[in-house]
Length: 100
Image 1 (tube, rainbow, N blue to C red):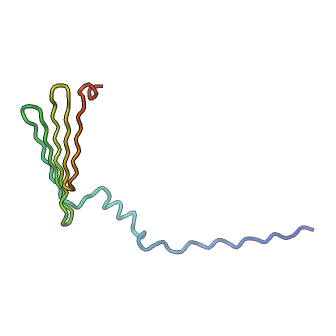
Image 2: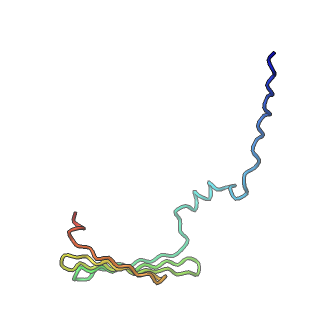
Image 3: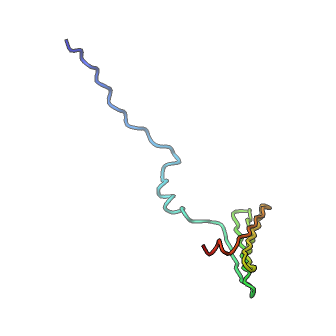
């Protein structure tokens, strides 16, 4: 005798999505890659080839800034970067590595 296999109950449709997901595609389309902060960047190059770049961004009440310099001395390039969160980084690269 063939035992009758029970038929599975039909799948219930999923309930409504999360409230935050409603209109997500429209918000992404309007807001993605759009910053509401104010940004300022200033770059200058001195006669000796030193490049100085300063940038600042204001988002709400926070102000983020950084200062970056690049100097080429003989066969070396010196990069120094300082940010408003008190971090400083510097790099000394031989010019031959930059040309490779």
